Length: 143
Image 1 (spheres, helix red, strand yellow):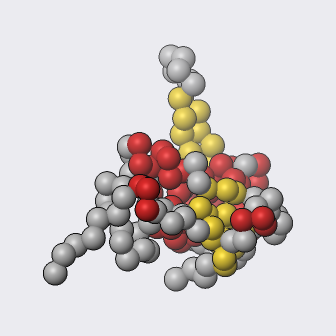
Image 2 (tube, rainbow, N blue to C red):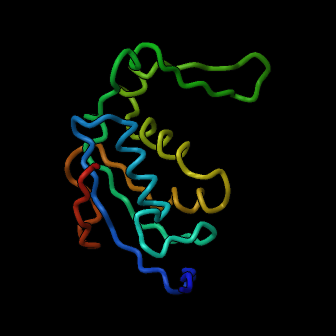
């Protein structure tokens, strides 16, 4: 038996739509990361970017289970001394839900050029409408 190794020239990319309404933010992000990475494909190759495009709609309706809205915190540093900023996820989900979903997906991808290029194929939308209808995306149900 021989193992097939995918090549960048032979990769067939598809478009998928994930609906995050009423679903946990982490599970939606994990499914999106799996699709962006290409791990659902039969000919997955770890060193080749063989993932698909992912559209996530209804991002503002994703839920955080338990007490994560009040206990989970997003930290970022401004670059100035002593300027470590923190934002609770309650305000982050109210003001910038796309950023919260993007952070979750980004942290589930590898921290190299494959992960950075995979993140460029992610599209996030607050409402149920998206601008990528011309690509004929398929609906993907969360596992």
